[in-house]
Amino acid sequence: MIKMRYCPEGIPISDFEVNNTLNVLLDYAEQIDEDVRATYSTENVFYSMQLRILKGEIPHTDVVFEYVTKTIPINEYAVPINPPRGFCDRSIKICEDIVYEQMRKRQCDAVSIKEGDLDYD
Image 1 (cartoon, rainbow, N blue to C red):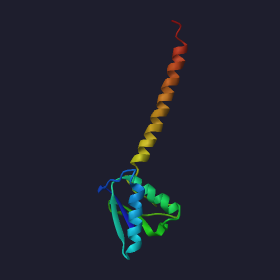
Image 2 (image 1 turned 30 degrees about the horizontal axis):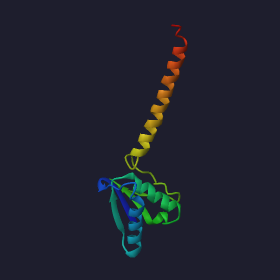
Image 3 (image 1 turned 90 degrees about the vertical axis):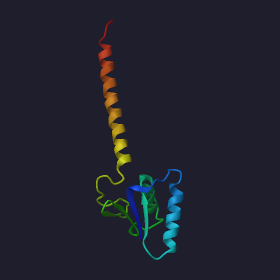
Image 4 (image 1 turned 30 degrees about the vertical axis):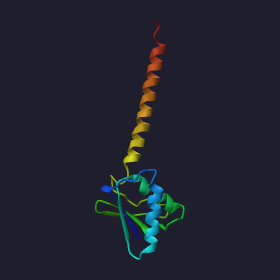
């Protein structure tokens, strides 16, 4: 079983090193007969592990995520089951905020154009 913990004290993994990091972790897990624990502070490792599960490189039953005091199992679609708020959700929140601000800006721009059309100076 691979137990991946998400916490601020974990190892930050660069996007450029995430695949190599998981290769090392998976190779090590194959070599020993006990649970393997790894602690990371970046979401990319967890998302990349989900992708490897989906691709069939590792069974979903061989990996759990951990956050604070909660163990988070992963279903057959590589989706964490009932993750608590704060677990690997910062990137998603940033993406949501970007889309919201883009929509707000488009609405403001549309209102400005309409108001500008009425200006006969």
